Image (cartoon, rainbow, N blue to C red; front, top):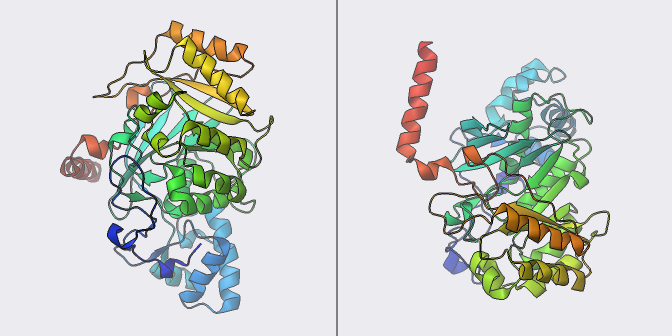
Length: 415
């Protein structure tokens, strides 16, 4: 990961002719870029690798020996103890705390709004230091707790069944902003100090806002921190990366990240997938399934998950189910299919398939020898279910949000 001091802004689109064209809205930030510097000029240490943390401390003025020692101590306090203030780091001399606090910060996203669903699902609307809003969702179950993490502010893929797809892509999230979602969730769940057993947050899915493989480097660097045995220490077998089918990046994801793969398939014919997942016009179903067959590490013990949203009279016929079985068997894919009842949102042009139709579809896939469970919708009442994420900032004006925040702060101060 590059040193935080070396972050640069990206040239405008017209000066980068080698960019990969993608369908959907024009991407105003087509390649990774740095966010604006924090208003206070401090460097956020969240998201830095061990080497980058040491180099950043050295660039701040520590000699090499001190930088190495302090980096090891700070790393432990950040990722094992959940510290957000240098003053909490008791093995670092108190005299050095002000020096660190003046130059660096251990950041968390600002929470604009936190909601809890009737089924226990939690959704947070988060805001970055440069004023960008994005969302994350925590889904508790009896045997696991899954955090759905965003990789971009907005999305560029324009999938027609997905609420997030109606947004424009504003920018990629940094590695620190991606890891920061995990840190904030563990704050909220009271899961510090870090421990390998008894966690509520056991799984991570890169299925929030954005396409992770269009923000590859930041997603990779963030997940390496999450998987680091000296860091958050979450097994790669408990992390799933979901893609709509960015074929050129899939092999690299398997080699450099190595987590479980989920693919947003959603249709089995070119015409239908072209409509609902426009990326299909660039990377067709056959290319996508071949890339899945070639995905490093895929086997019967680590099956690829295919996400399939059930849309009434669009992709839910018995013929579609039989074709799905044929395709997966043709490419000899170690596969599981997640059938997702469509989650409605205002302005959506689709309806959810009937329970009977979903059951018939599932039975056909099961009879073909492929697991096809129906995902139980979670968090629908707070728009936290699959395909519903779209920041509340899009629903309310920023001014209205700011007024609400100011009123809440004034009320808290008065109390």
